[in-house]
Amino acid sequence: MVINVCIGSACHLKGSYDIIKIFEKLIEENKLSEKLSVKASFCLGNCVGAVSVKFDDKVYSVQPDTANEFFESVVREKVC
Image (cartoon, rainbow, N blue to C red):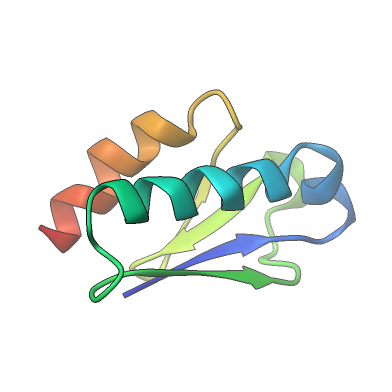
């Protein structure tokens, strides 16, 4: 499975690169690299809700301070 994180202008300004780093760290810590990867993506069409994260064909609004919670409640439930 893939987590796409928008790196377009609005998302970049709101911390998309921080979110990518957080997700990469969580994937490593949880030993999920065989099942999950993070990819940078250009506009996901949700600039108002930046930072946009696409996972399992849904687009979510995630902030650096909510990335851990998002990973635990949305991503891990689907992957594990």
